[in-house]
Amino acid sequence: MLAIIEAAGWPIWPILLASVIAVTFIIYCLFNLRKSAVAPKELLPRVVQEYRQGGVNRQMLAKLSANSPLGRIFAAGLKNVSSTREVMKESIEEAGRAAAHDLERFVPAIGTIASMGPLLGLLGTEIGMIEIFGSQAPTGSSPAQLAHGISIALYNTAFGLIVAIPSMFFYRYFRSKIDSLVIDMEMQAIKLVEIVHGERQA
Image (tube, rainbow, N blue to C red):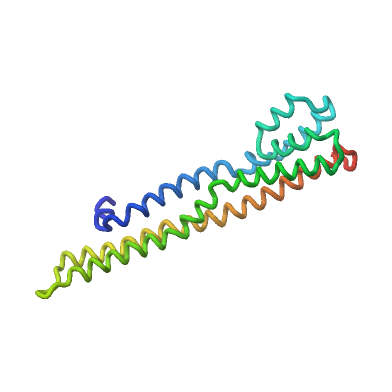
């Protein structure tokens, strides 16, 4: 592996850096975008039960806010439970937008790396071509320089695609996952509003 990196020349280092960043963000998103971490299925029934047993108190809201993004949305709504349905819904929508923004924190960076990978590979290819043409001399070309230029061109193109393809896959996957989670949180939040205002049975 080290021999391949050496053969690819210095243009490979930005690609390797991008790959490390992409892997870090992908692992972070895989861990933090789990449904059980974002919108636990059992949270709504538990919140409704606690609300009916003891109402809303500071301890309950703090516990909810620390639970998950859905918990923060529920806490924002329950803070305004004594207000009208519209006020409660508005506070939930504001908290929902903030939660969606937090979920998307590193996903655009993965998409950027997916777009940059082929470009960085192309940069390495161009540098390799420059080395190839630079090796041409009136007395003939140097085979060593010619081979070095070709290796820079090919390795960087390949590494750029190796970084870009998985990054694009995970970018699309996480975008779809976030959309699904946001819809799920919206539906559960609407259920909470309707339940506490007596418009729906739990």
